[in-house]
Length: 355
Ligand code: DAH
Image (cartoon, rainbow, N blue to C red; front, side, top):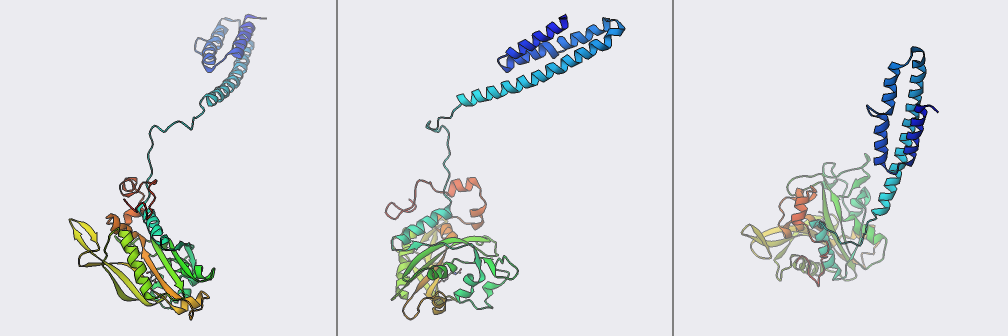
């Protein structure tokens, strides 16, 4: 075996026995660096007789290729083995306590939905849901809304299909009909959820939240409605006394219909609920129209009741002193950190809602 072959075999053995990438790197530089094995052999060619030059150069080149290939394979194998080893060692101990953790916050809208649900569940209401993508029938027709009603206008409603048969619900009221159609009276439900209208300014956003209430039984009167809402508003604002007024209004799905205002005053830039001589509208309500009951397969001679629709975002703004509705939906972490709620502090009536 020539010296060249001996050296080459020697490097191959060394490479074969290398135990880590550091050793491989050392051997690599011994072979391929400027003064390494391959270059030194190439330099010797200059001193050789002309007739041997080509043959020797070919031999060095093929040795270079052979060694390069071996190197790449070895390097890859070692890398794999090292990663395996590291993964084995770096097992996470999930029982270790967290060193630096941040608690997320509950959005004021979610908080207020939980608060309202808790208040109504205390007097026997259960929670129902309906789809955001609603049919024109449930959103308008079944709710006794006449064909030419302004709410059906393309400017106010997001229609999904050109034939105007599918839309994003403009209120949570369709859940009334859906609930009644799938069950038997009595009904005592609330339905919180997202609603959509083509509107945007400081107090309107294209998506907002409502909560529908419905109580149907044999002898339900406007008196029950007033009592129920009076209880709700007091509990929600966590005050002993409340000033409330029912203003005659019109909704196609209730007869009679009313809008409810609560009394307030401003003190040192803060809104004080339940006192003062200013009025603020917070919800619409009324006695469910017989046509709605008929469309819901309920015998309106036997059963009647009340319904109401509350603007959730508006209540959240009022209770927690937030003055721009648009900020609710900007997903600004700093905002949420300031206005949000502790996730472990679930609102309940007996433990307290917001305190
Ligand atoms: N759906 C009405 C709206 O979006 C609110 C409303 C008013 C709901 C009266 C009701 C109701 O259930 O009885 O403006």
